[in-house]
Length: 126
Length: 294
Image (cartoon, rainbow over all chains, first blue to last red):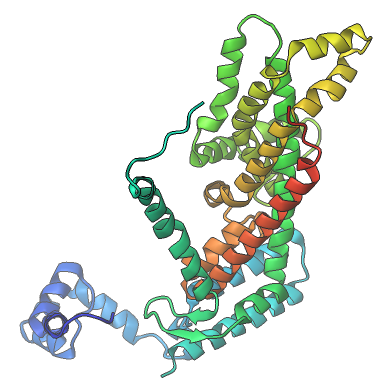
């Protein structure tokens, strides 16, 4: 990500500004059905009556708004997720295939995962 | 025989230059970078590095995962070398008989080496498929439930067989060449002295084959240690619960899949190099001293 000149970074910034603009968010929503990126875009869509004509597009919103907001529902927020998933999967396989004691296998996996998280934290702290 | 001297002083170096450049760019530079990387903890995408010294190596020696991988690789290499060379010698001796269609047999025996590891893996994958494969089906009549997906030993056996099978062609070619180089009069003389075929083989033919055997020993070790990655990646992905997690595959996982362990992967590649180098030196010493060069 380093080593580009100012003009390139400027271009990247302006591209992202364009992507997150309201008009583009509306185009995106109408084309794919995903959420628009900005609240202002949602307001604009409501104002023009889009959701009355197409109530099916409201379903995604209502589903999210009717859910709970607990840490468990936040999804997997792990640094170095792929490695940890691989360690976990291998631990499960060992338990099922080789009849390793489940607690021992998962404890070992936890220790390894903690080590990986520490490494990750050390790499991204400023 | 006259020796020729280049008229131009710089000509020899100029002619060697392309090869030397290739060796430096594709071997020396990556090796040095690998040694350098193994001393760091690296973040995959931002390139941030923290110098950690020999910590990568220390962790490897203490990690059960890595030591298990060393064990699996040892068994795998031993199988490929021992079974591969024995079977190939048998086939080569059989193909060396003065029978009709000798050329046909020779060509047919070589073709396993012409396959790519992916194709060889696919063939054995289908052969040993628990649901539709013929091998588990026939083994069932002996009461063996061969399942490479749920049984660690079967999985290791499966990849060992596939790797050995692939190298059969290569080994047979060299053994055949070695067998054809044995002078007939030596065998005839021993037959006149009253040696039967078994004695003739083990006392005359086999010792005269030792240079070939040494060469194939080393080539098969290198193949099993380094070139079987494609086979593992296509078939078992390190096996049910790390059963076929050979060193080169563990290295790949740490370096390319779990991208934040590039430092550890570099350390593993250095250790693998040292391991195979030591093995090769041992082979040279033990077998090389007994190799009978005419």
